[in-house]
Length: 265
Image 1 (cartoon, rainbow, N blue to C red):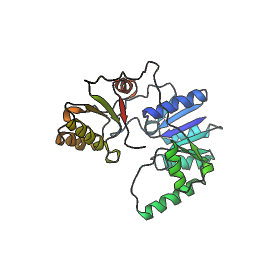
Image 2: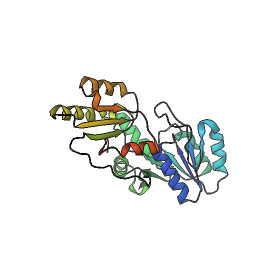
Image 3: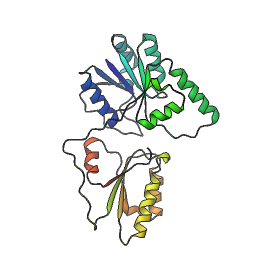
Image 4: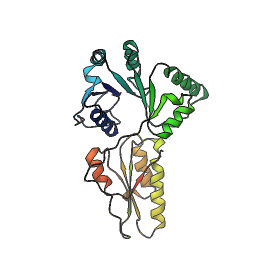
């Protein structure tokens, strides 16, 4: 059975869970650390049919017993520095269960030389105890290779996105209507959403009428800063903040827009 251990039931995590559950005929269980967090205020239930548990509620003892009773257990662990990493690696090592590290896209932290070397040493040491690494997309694979991991231990593991059957491309905007953009993500400095706000302000200032509107989906510690930026650039009426959206609600919003802004590759 596949046991996926990850922090939260985010939308693309749940899509991956459904894909794995279908591919392995139900021989799959997801173990989420918690239902939601302050940064990601998700709904109280995943609303999915795949088997899942929340470690904050059932405890790691339940997880250990489940692994111990599964003779064909394989673990996919979300991240090498998550809150679940140490406990999960200890359990899989004791039970001699193969574990794969599922790595998300690299975060562009500026690390000191000592921390960078320590990180590389840790990953190379970790690679001796795990079955392999699953990198989300080519940039992640290339980043892991740059940290010294063996190419043979890496597998490109894409994000999983559900597209509903009724979804269609948005109709082209007429010349009299502004171009509508949507930016999705947690409001933190590294995502640089203020660049999008400044671009909208500049484009509208140079046009004879409002030509661009921007909707920011998400929330986070930088939201007040982003709102202040929009106000200071006199484009608050063209920049809209709508908080977190999930699943079908997000798809309905996407149908209204012409472009998707992405600040990180």
